[in-house]
Amino acid sequence: MSGPLSPAPPAEAGPGTVTPSVGPLRRRRVRWGDRLLFGYTWLVLLWLFAPIAVMIAFGFNDTKSKSNVSWQGFTLKWWGRLGDYPDLTTAVTNSISIALLATLVTTVLGTLMGIALGRYRFRGQAATNLVMFAAISSPELVMGASLLSLFISLGVQTGYTTIVLAHVLFSVSFVAVTVRARVVGLDGSIEEAARDLGASTWITFWRVTFPMILPGVVSGALLAFALSIDDFVITQFTSGATITFPLWIYGAVRIGVPPQVNILGTLIFAVGVAIAVVNTLTSRRRS
Amino acid sequence: MRRKIAPYLLILPGGLWLVIFLVVPLVFMASVSTQEGDVVNGFVQTFHLANFTDALVEYKTQFLRSAGYGLAGTLLTIALAYPVAYWIAFKGGARKSTYLLLVLLPFFVSFVLRTVSWKFLLADDGILLQPLKDLGLVPAGFHVLQTTVAVVGGLTYNYLPFMILPIYVALERVDPRVVEASYDLYSTARDSFTKIVLPLSLPGVFAGVLMTFVPMTSDYVNASILGGPSNTMIGNIIQTEYLVNNDYPAGAALSFTLMAAMLIGIFVYAKALGTENVLEAAAR
Image (tube, rainbow over all chains, first blue to last red; front, side):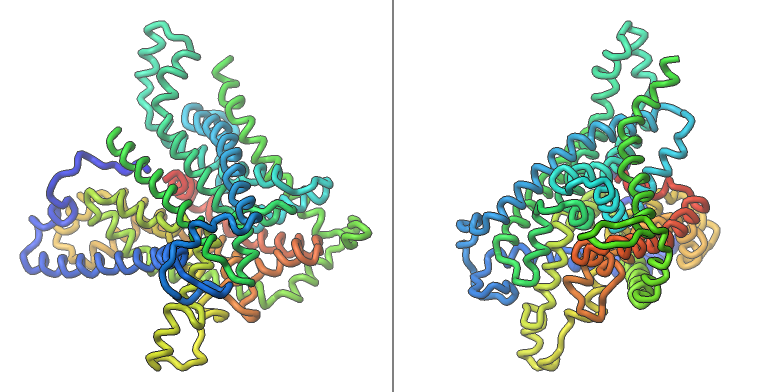
């Protein structure tokens, strides 16, 4: 997230810059409009948060039945019984290890692509952009279905490995564009200076270029991890007998989703938010 | 010489990955779509094009319903997203990145789990409907789940951030001095919005449409968790053909048809508006 956050002026930038040129009458109207917009924005945000709040709350629900939909009172007992469903635990560990592995591969491949796209002009660049665009915008269902067609035709057994392959596929373009954005913004004269001072290409890259694009690489890696751990559709098509966290939940919907799922979801949510906040704060400090 | 091959070496691993697992599988899917047979005896290539006509005739309703849901959901997300993106871009001030983080907050909960949470919320005896029923505000038989409203609502919910982000990116790029200039030239607030801000933000809206309509139309998670038998979308059919019935040719024919329809749209989009808006929004 690169928002051009200039050393924020203390006064609100938006209305402050416009009002001097307009009369007091308009100013009042604009302010009413602002208030309306502000309220609308928060209503939409609250709507976005509603199911998250429910997810968190029902991890503390003292439910007796299998369907965890009505509030029965507060309890902490599910936290002590997180491991009640061994296959759920396996699903979560699968999700995490798949996400780590996919992120590692994706980050390496995507960073290389991002550097190439941001640094060089070459034949086939437009084609590369088009393929990446297709990977980002084509429906997951079609990607999943065509991957499964490939695996079936070649007699490849779907499972853990094919999930990782698929996850790298749909996240590599995201890392590439994130890194590319960072590379394009680089000041080339710094690298030139390094070379003038006698640094080899290799040293220049690792000591000068790489540290400068690192924030882009980190954001890309975080995005790849988030995309992987959350993925359902492509995973379902390429999973075979392997179960991940989202697949387990989907399978449990009909019989009733136990509170353990809410707690695990809450934990993943908390970790994700913490990382995002730290990432935003550090990138803000850097700029 | 070294400079010449450097970009290709860098592109190669990722590029190959994309070609092998994105482009090549499409060829295989095309091939499977004209095969005949079953799982037990194997599938044979017979160039049986009737798979396509059969699939289209049998699942015409689901195709049309998916397009309808996708369209309704997309229009709803525009209506919900535009004012929010506008507020963040122009009035967010120093808190812009905080607001953006709030918009992205749902992404930290798995897509399936979010949808399941809506199922909790909207359940017949859930925390929203039960109190209303107790108060007699809605009839006891009233339900939201298993209706079109629930499915379109779920789709709108799940894809809303994909509309807010590109519109925000486009709006943020609007130079405030241009808007100011319009006021100096005695433009009304309405005119400076419809004649300056709105046209400048349209590329963002188009990018958002692409990023919401395509996944909404091919979604099957919302319909299967929130919807009932009368809300089946084409995604549900394809998923069932592939993973339950193991009728791969039928599933391939259906998803190939779906993809062809989408691809025409995507390529027309890429030709007309370029790929940059979507790639940039994805980089956020």
